[in-house]
Image (cartoon, rainbow, N blue to C red; front, side, top):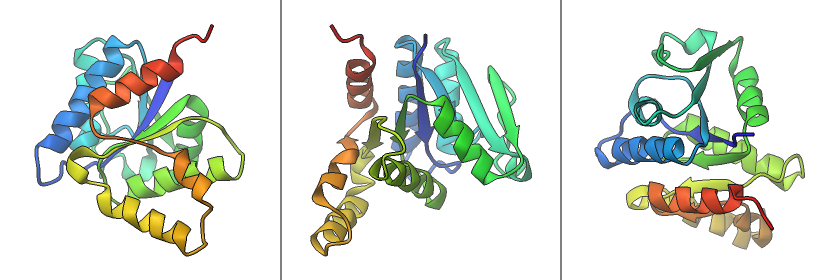
Length: 185
């Protein structure tokens, strides 16, 4: 059975083209690694870049978008499957249920919300799926320093910092995903 990766990323492209370039590269790598992409369903920004990168390389892509933002985020009409949900909670639940692993690229509050939720669920024992954070050009440096500070101040156990594996680029993320998804002997 094909493995699937849920990618959280922005519907914006950011101020540096590297963010969309890394999203597109990751999409291509997912296709060539035979890993299905599960993502937020938009055709714009980093979301559009990862979907298009995967599709151009012959990969399988399923998007999940709430009805009330399908126009705002410009729902992608070229996907293998586009699920339209009633609300954000259904979107996130469907994303989590359909995925074998999670990965966050650059993005805003929505990306951080989704990332923090899957980490919290892992902390609470609701899943044991791997979670990756692609720290393109140090995008997440301040966030990582903040959560280390939260731990030092006693609001998070140090072990919980290990729930997210930080990688620096799309190539490194795919290398780690392939290790995780390869059959164990």
